[in-house]
Image 1: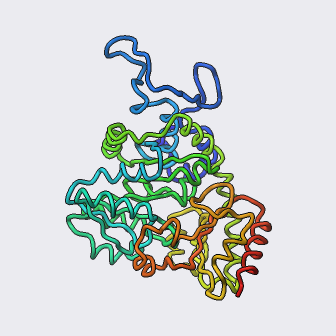
Image 2: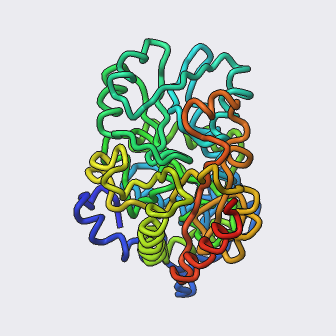
Image 3: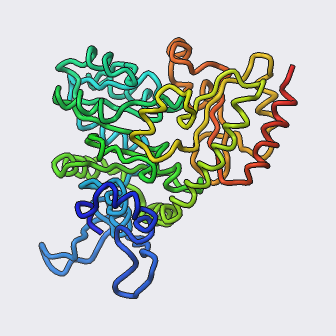
Length: 393
């Protein structure tokens, strides 16, 4: 299926089929319904200058190519690229910038993205500016000729802040800047940033796209061929490509994306109803709550609220005891797996962000982030209730 033949409305109605039959389906030679794992580093060439379309697996591999075509179609873009991790994907995208350039990032952003900009790219005279991207007027004020890109997350990690992707795109393009959207929390099933005006969309495919906590991967889709070709050159030149086996795992994981996401969201909405009235919770962040700031914007640009919940534990509760007494939900890094995961952003995912910055934006020490899995929802609530009881002072 070619993405330019599919409208936005068609794609949303067809995506449950597209995740299974999109991209390169099966194997023409044998009839195998699963894309083969081409576990090879190089390819036999017929003669000098004549090959089958593949020369060396860093440059191109049929299994990785099947994944890259699939994600390109799901995000309705021109070029898809697979990397060895989400950070490798972000690194490649940031390599589009040059010395003297600046990138606007949100005040609420994944710690790894902040770290690579602050500790790596600043060494190459590529600067960043932290802005509340949910405030379009503030973005307009802060953009200047040095800004060549705006990198956003919506919902953002970990406070699930919503940014108007279409509004940001209009501002950025007026000033000649690229718009890069980390779509990890939503997946192309729930949100497609390229159709909202973004130039590049990326994923930590380790999360919902893989879905089973068994692969580390990053995916990038470019809206235009020109940017796509530049990124493809960077991918080949720097070599942070995804292996054939991990590419195959992702293709397999994506086949169940829509059914998994439906269950993830169903469970999350059930848990939110429990948490929002609990005495142990002083604040809850979830895009599906009408009282949540950004609710109306999110509803206009996404097809669902997602399955990430963050909440602030009351100071009347011992946070260490809370984590110590969770038994079914797993305390650990990452998110988006079939199993529910809980984390402490201040000391885990966002520890690289300075304390003062964390406090200012709301990543307080008693903030808890919950990635809701697909287990029985009643079991998850019982697990949380036990942790609340044991943690109560």
